[in-house]
Length: 308
Image: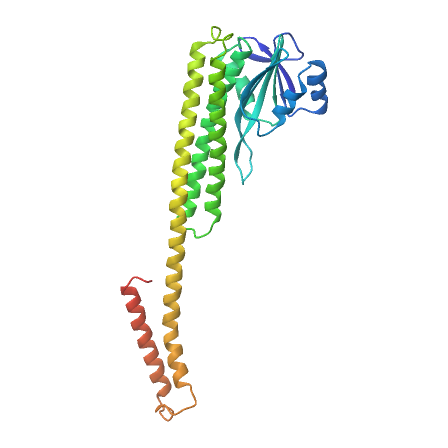
């Protein structure tokens, strides 16, 4: 999908390209790929780098073109990996500025809507990158709140569970947090490199730069906190599951011992040998009474020791 945006007290979509407008391309088709590579002359190696799902945040300049890659969070709607991060590339030269993403994201749509609500214009290409970094940090925090809810739900299920499914759910969430931590560190390094660009130091909006640093730092700290809590929680609940299993095994063993008492008595007196009860009319009742009595004593003993 290809869209053109230009400043008009916010970013508003335009039907066609105009100089210095922002071109946003998501999930490019073959036709859009030809448009980028042949009409706009975007370097093909830049295009291929952005397509790589594991591409790290960085800045690269080649033949007058500038490539800036940042990583943003996405909701994958996948049970096994609910959240992930993807690369978004900002490529610009002269009057051309393009953002390329090979995945549909909520962040870029929200970014445009927010600029319209706040009447925020994009001053230049580096200003666009900083605002995208700010928006991505906010979305990291939004998704972290959803991660926290998933952790609480898994914890509630684990309290009464002896299965591994809930523990595996926590493991998947932990993988999401690892992706978040790695991507946020990459974005932080990218921000420092942008700040140290000599040609741009005097043009940055200092308030915007400070906001980006604050939000990025907060997202990193919250991700690290959730990751540490989740690691401790998984260790604790792994022990809980083991203890639950031990408790059940102890109860099953106790029941087996109780049932073994009448079985042993019946086996002894069921042998084809003299036992002093073979001619007694009440022999069967005596055996039942003794079995019940000993079994009751066993139950009382196990209850006293809290094995039940």
